[in-house]
Image 1 (tube, rainbow, N blue to C red):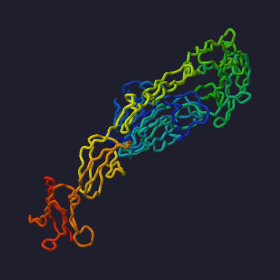
Image 2 (cartoon, helix red, strand yellow):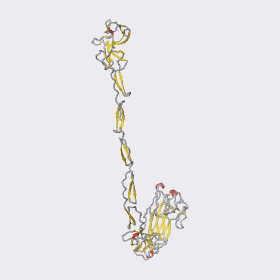
Image 3 (cartoon, rainbow, N blue to C red):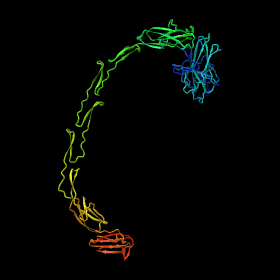
Length: 611
């Protein structure tokens, strides 16, 4: 019964050997030299599928598509059915080459058979074929059934098995490669044909799908080498050494043949070979060689096999290459050409004279007539410089580089000064004189030079009193002009501060003068001072409330009140002091109010009595 992909099992392809692919010897390969292929099956070329194999070759059913199911096969260039990995056949050089693609049945057994005729009796042969597992490793949940094929060789009566071998399990891969398997066998006396059978060893299920290509039968013999007298397997000589003579010797390893018969052959293209008459010994002497030639020998185990292309093998090839000497090369004026008979080449010796070192403005060119370097070019002219400049030639930029900076023009000149550059001394020269300072100044005047206007300015004047006032027990003097003034209360000791602190009340003469003057102006000032508090506790300090200096005024009046407006003490035009008593009784600690009238000016405030 036919099933879909997931239950398909064994598929095969038959395709040809490439020297770049790995050759496996699980079954056994011919270890010696071989003859030309006796039988080759590469299944042809074409883009279609088919035709079916000849009747009797297989008991599987043919389908003309790329997706055979269980127990079916096809012949085609590729298959992508069911996710199989077969992008192309195996045969090298094929375009749309075909392979045999088989989906094996669930039941193990024979799936391919063919008869090979024209063999020689008692002769060793090699059968080989290429296989590939079509199922990717990721299919069937990663547990696909591997392929396993048995190759069997039977006599032409199908009653005697001459040789057999199993490939063993070949598991699926996501990047499969074609692999070659081979089987070596020997025919019996009077046996000229054999039957090749391919048998599926694997069980059915998901997997066991493969392909086979390039089935080949060829004779197998000893490993047979050819060498000259110094054991070279090939030589190259120069045509100057011709005509050439040499002796070649065949050496079999006796691994297959028990006896050896030889026929030496010669070729000029390694494709078409001609027997050399009379040369049937293990050694041959060649002479008079003037062109490239190839030598080999046909080798048979019997004389009859030697003359049968289906039964003999060919030795390795000895290549004798004659290299023609080339035309003498054109040489430079400094070179010499000499023919080398060993390499068949011309040896050219000699070295061009070393190019001289040149300046950047120079050019060197080789003169083949004089066989020397000619140098031309002139250095650029040096530039004209300022007195502060120097110049050096830069071979990188090929130009004169001027360095140096004019001396910096002096700064910080006075307003009356000017500067000019002197190219002779290569320096700046400064000229100019400050204007003469004025004379005849008053003592309060000061002459200051103004660098902005570049003239002398005279500043300073006598002090002019604007106001004199008191601030508590301090005298504050304000002038209507500004100057470097000094102040005094006695005309002897002067100070720069315009405030006199902690001055007792009284009549004072105030002196004011400019700092550098002996002349001064005066003005009288009456200072009376009203204390902020007093402490009538008989400790001898601040025991009475006294308004000092008030007696210096022509008219004055002093009145003391409590907070309820009751008058406690009063004095008119007479000295005043209060001891904090009323009606011989001490008054309590608190604030009291005063009213002072001096020459019609009223002063009102309060002070504190502290006990």
